[in-house]
Image (tube, rainbow, N blue to C red; front, side, top):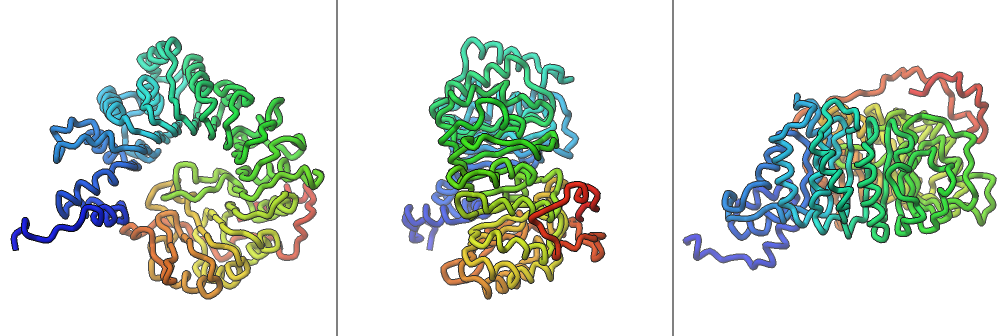
Length: 518
């Protein structure tokens, strides 16, 4: 039978097959035939996540190429809807810190060839690449752009101060950029502050997006007033539903009046203590989703509030813990709380106007007897993320089934995060991160104690989903090779007998003298 006489699958069926194929398998499937290639290529390029410098450069060269130089004469740039450049792209590679005109010109051309770009994230914390890419975007913004997420290591006194970039922003002062569909703007400044021209252009951009902007984050490690310098007054941003700002901004006049705000991320990058800080009872009345440090939670779940003044917080992320693939770019927790601090903070959950449904927190080690102390507080939990900075003992992971999973009847999602490991390298993870057989045995134990649980992870490298037939399937196959891990020592020097402690009352002086947990 010749190739032309072979039965051909219907196009609709090929599309379904390709859409259900894991992205890691799409390149192989695309080689099956020209039809499969036509179906797989848009799926391959729709969302691009770049983690390695070499891959980022190859991707840029491909996307910047004219269609005549590519297979089947396709223009690949318009296929891209989401482009994410992770911090690891320019880390540990020996790439010069300054601006490379050839690299910058390549990326500028790449971005111009993406008219359908909806999401752009450049999360490179120690390179000035982000400001250059931002310049290219704002000079000719894609009309469909909705999400702009940037880390800008750039300031007026930067050693490689890019004069061409500043000239572009001077022109943008005259003709401000407009992004009509911008719904999310996120900016992090790890060093220094922006120039006055950049501040003004970004301020104008946000003001022009007032009716569409729903998520706003402006934070800095060194510039406490970055939010006030760039953002328009919140009273002029009526559509905002998710806001990220520094703790010091909470107590400034005019903050907290937004009755529509549903989610708030509070950052305390200067490690200042706000034990005595008090919010107005009328501040953030509709708040449902809160991300903050344990020692800031009392500002929102205040025991002194009347029942009708309590905020309906049902989602809580302590220490800014989130579960993201391969640890994400914000997953690392700088200061890991003690179990005692977490338990003390979570006692305030009873002062929410609604039961807690989703919880994420970070501690150093997995300790079953301390985990059990949470159960009276989190009985109605539906999802939980726990980040550890030491690889859990494997017997303790097994014990979670009977000790914890069995006693949370509504829990459908349980994710263990090794994001603190990933911050030091992508090959770092929990000791058991790539052991499928061991993880399957734990899942079998968890399933014995819960019929509700359907989404589990023992690492950020991949997850497990429970099918309709009750079988567990990994979202992708583990990486090859061993992991670099740090496991708890049997004698960890923890002298606190926390099982017998009353977490309702603490003597502050005594707590300061106690040996740090773990």
